[in-house]
Length: 511
Image (cartoon, rainbow, N blue to C red):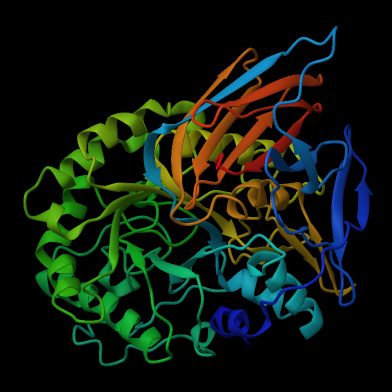
């Protein structure tokens, strides 16, 4: 079975510049306009390039509940209102007040996603890869790679299932990892384990909760397990940017958890990092520069986890940032991110997992606009509270929302119909594109204020060279006349936000 590591090679071959083309829409039954864009071997919609932005003009990309999907428009700056027009919303941007730099956006290279990619023809594979990574696609520049199996694998496995093999003599990448090829370009990969090999845990298996055995030999072996993972990938010319220590460590407290997990408290993660993993990573030339992220769980555990690990003078030396998932945000206010950033301004905060379809309705809702809204709302809030980027979960799933060996069906931006040899771009695909496409790595978030309607939110960046970009989400069921004001340049723009819409506006700094 060919898997994601071959796909990473495909990225270096197939990502190319192609002409823009419109969405081939398909409507599903629903209370609203449940629209997807259909792609096959011969046709797939692409995003029209920004092109030259003339003096006094702006380029606007719009997606709406009614059916627009990253539709490009050109508008004049500074236009006057009509006699009877009244602005409903004012968005003020001040580029002199700057915050964090943007690192990037992307998704996860799970086994399930890889299986779905290779279930379609090579031409359709090429369309999928271009949709995510190409110049006329979302231009993703971040990828998450599970270390061994997770819930979106077809079975439970580690890289060394031979018990008591403390020297890891039997370590080896799995079948899912073997078809590695060279990657290049802007893609930055980070790795996350769901569990140590079962024999290293108190329970004897990867599935379900439980911690590592309290045995120095186990701690030492597991730290070396990380090193061997990165060495194995490096032998196939695949470099990594970073890692998280454990996916969702809090779930490991549940002994009945349905898939792979392992429990850490903030204290046990701190101790494993400073006594074993950190020194091993720093002592190896290949891994010494990897960005190490703590937590990799919900923000409700902040700032406590960060304080415990970063306030320790030894463990803080080995950690660079905080990985955060979006689950539970309804019960965990974003101010927790602000508090954490104030406590530890030298550490970054990065979104490492999110998905829809995991609660109440399990699996995809085809053409669901409100998932696109939820994605945009969360990304805007996260960026405004110090995130440097945002990583989606599975890049591709089937129409059921799998495969998943524990039937944990969820949604994804691209859904594959391998019987028809085609795939469907969900509204959330375009929602992600409003950010990944236009907020490039190295751009800097700037002050943004929204007045006039609580249904509207926005985030803005300045891009190297002075270009500005603002993403605006309107959850209003009514059209809203909106003025965007750039206080640093004196530019302003007036546009109508259609009901339930997302806009990205790009303009140049005044010469």
